[in-house]
Image (tube, rainbow, N blue to C red; front, side, top):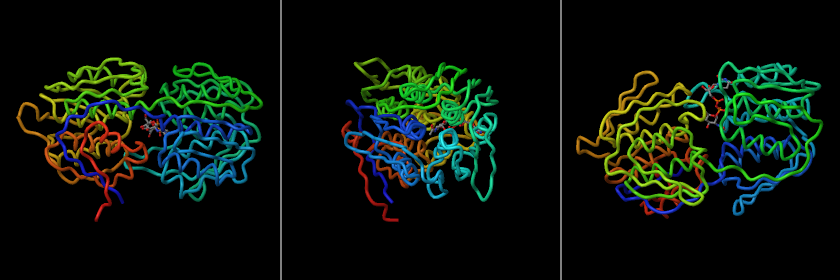
Length: 425
Ligand code: UD1
């Protein structure tokens, strides 16, 4: 297992480029199952979750190629020999459940392992299943697997009681080949949903309203070939902006539009940082005095739960008290215990974390060995390590590798002292 060793306290400055968004690439790669023609997907990040996705497609009999240098994937799902997503793969990546909609829509059946809980919460898939049932699918849960079947899906009106990114994506993918019109109400509005719809429309789907709370899909008989460039990763971009902010540095992230960042951008400004448009991207200049900021996580365009941990790292250094409320996942404060090991002052009560910034005390974070528990918690610990005095070792960074492409190389190029090594333990 690898670990990252960081000598903190250096200013992070320079230019880094945002890659394609993992959370857009995953549903788009699964959506290629809806067409029997070749789809070319550009800007696919070279990440562990992408390898898992391609593996799932390949073991279904789909032809895939991926070049990590050009980040180009070609997929042709001429047919599917086994419409199964097995436990061994689903347990490493919950997003595998996104094969359900496309498989049932095109082949009339799917067998997908139930994902089970994960470190940030229970994460049920009831909304995905509810939508498919409304479209006429029969769902059975047996031996840890979801068995979904349907001769031909029918358009339906689906109102989600709660906003879900994955359930919205699965429903869109099922609906593009269903008979008739589907209306999704209370749909997720994340940029990755808009990107999925853009790809599907480019290969012949009829989806309107993606990016708003109501999405209308007119089913079509067949989709054709096409190519698509994946939208930039707003979470990766946000993470590098915080790296600049937390070290009082000056970082430009190329290829990212402020509109993709939602409430994160205004909260970053509230912390005293200077965030401006710079060419195709955004530039942050860190403030000498980081101000406290309170926020709660919400679906887009609210503050993204996927940026909560990283922003909290910044707030540990603020001059004053911040309150962070996590509204999306019930157990997403695993990074707090590790931040405490670095000297942060944080108290958690239920879904609220109160962060007493070290700014006024004249104290700093100080390096220690910490353990990554999930993807964004890992990023939070790397950011805290950049700001901490002394050496920080972040263990179990396989989580980090699921969502960030060569983070240590990017940070080194920005002036950080960080290296990857084998964990001797
Ligand atoms: C996606 C993102 C993830 C992000 C999350 C919230 C991908 C691959 N992952 O995850 O990085 O943190 O959105 O922005 O895009 N829920 C149910 N029943 C369901 C589905 C969801 O109760 O059937 C609940 C979840 O437990 C959670 C909330 O709804 O509390 C939101 O989850 P959801 O938007 O579905 O997250 P994912 O799509 O899994």
